[in-house]
Length: 309
Image (cartoon, rainbow, N blue to C red; front, side):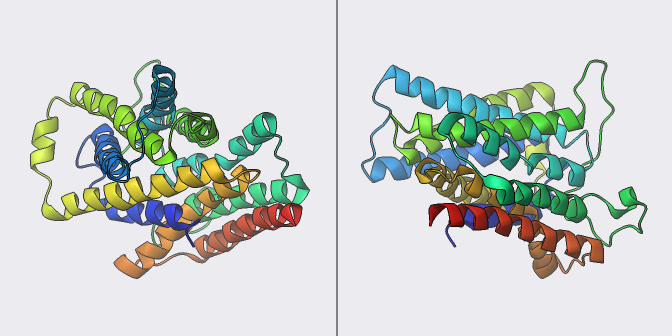
């Protein structure tokens, strides 16, 4: 159960954040998700006697980790979601296990095998059925979209498309998943996770203030329910989820792709939480997508299990 906890927290955070999306600059949301959760992890690490990075080189590793998995991932994700349908964007971002599979094979010699590779493809197909609006396939619209709705903004000349930004976000997360082992050669996993969230989150606040001149006014208009959603996303979708995920990524020798494949479960948990908490209904196509996604995860895990036996 501990393995799926980060994806449960990320999925339920998507539901919690629906009342916040569009009310405030998305880069501020990324900052609030990273920095407070990073501070919590840093305080926990200090209280439990975990040492800080011992050398400038070790701090450099944490800073590189923060730049890629923290600042770049959140920035690409936040801005990309304003330029793309949220369902399609989630399919792109949640397809990052494919990149993890390639990188793990190149860097660590991990081999997934035919069944596992098939599972990755099945998982991505399931995400498409679950999250891309059914009208895309010429079918009747779904009762509900399982991902947050963000109003798209016109693209300026030379601006990257939403698809491109979400692709870059997926690659940032994939590289972060793989590089955590390199970082943790010199740094405790909890310390590395906490400080990479802090260091990676600070530039997001600066960027949000530069992008949105009325940021302070936006913050002041948030109500109690919106602050509660932000805090839930910070505590559970931030501190707990990242601490568990990167600890597992560091210790999952030979099984990075297996861990990363569980990312496919995030929208499934989001859809389930929407049904239970908000009373949302899912179209038959979306239910089929959830089932196909779970099959993909099972195929990946089945191959990994057979190889380790």
